[in-house]
Length: 193
Image (cartoon, rainbow, N blue to C red; front, side, top):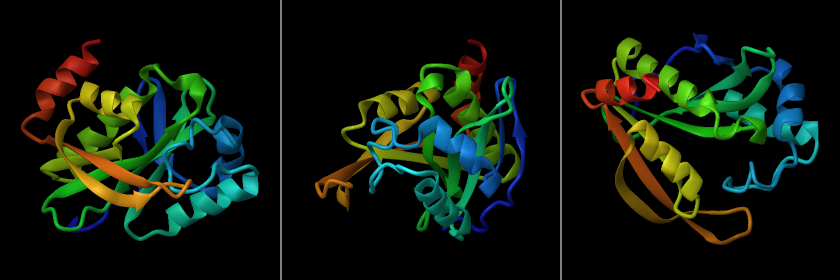
């Protein structure tokens, strides 16, 4: 278990600003991804069809004691384009997970995901003193697996029949990890692009 979940902070990059998720972000977030089947495809419930449904999901995330969610703000527009979260990792010392991440399709294959991960991983290692960052995804979500591999995630294993998908089928969950001593080389490669 993470010794103590981190306090919410603002993390600034060139392309994005990560700030604590609040109800003030809900309208932008609904515009960014509400009802989009592809964005919400890999979560365990149906895509939010209304802003109220998105607010219900986000509020539960905000209130969860083992999650620290961030709104992903595009610096160019000042608008929220998705969210990402630190998550507790029971059973692992000095470890934290980055997950519950989604972005508007308009920022897919852009600098947004890479910069978010660099900000979160830097903060986890340099400020929080973690020694391991964990990421996981559905075994069918190849786009996410490839993105995790690009930032330096090492495949650690697959947890079979981990949870049910929204359609009732079983999800196998693929786990990745990045260690603190591995990160500098990955960071240099990513920020050198």
